[in-house]
Length: 253
Image (cartoon, one colour):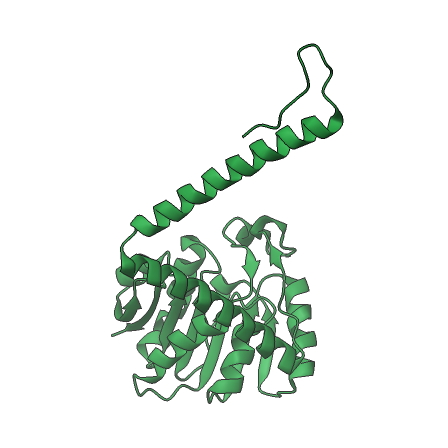
């Protein structure tokens, strides 16, 4: 209901105008809220529960990431667009993706699946390692003889080096290199990718390391696997895939 004003011809006071505005605003807000509630109530129960569950899980996951970084004294925060990443590898810049630290839950889900294969991995290799989050999580929770982060942005490598000093591990190192030309070490490697670059870089990396994949039981753990079809074309078999999280494991057989 609108607030009443004075007689005809009478200039309404500021209080009258304010009352009219607030009454209208409150009514509009109430109608919008009722509409949202009605829409939510019309959804199937399973959808409502899933929505609430996802929001709760998101909060728990965020808290886990914060606690992990705080506990180890790490700084993996920030978002940097791919075109803003500083690098001397100019040809790779066009194929790069934005920097954003991977979540603990995303790393854990894929690494747990990789461990189910029964393969004993010698090295953990993170392509597009950023500030090192995946390497630190893998070192803290799994057994690898050596962990290597490969990152084409030198400032991010410097940030990862600062983190490794705080983490206090002597089997983790970070390399400033273009993943396309990076050569995998001998042995069984668990190669981790959090969609760090486009198809061109991925294909070049596979081409340069096919002999290593043929001679070992190495696996590619691909999170946010947008270019997974490249792996199939190169002869890799999908060992596992989660459609919801868009993550998968691949091995050359």
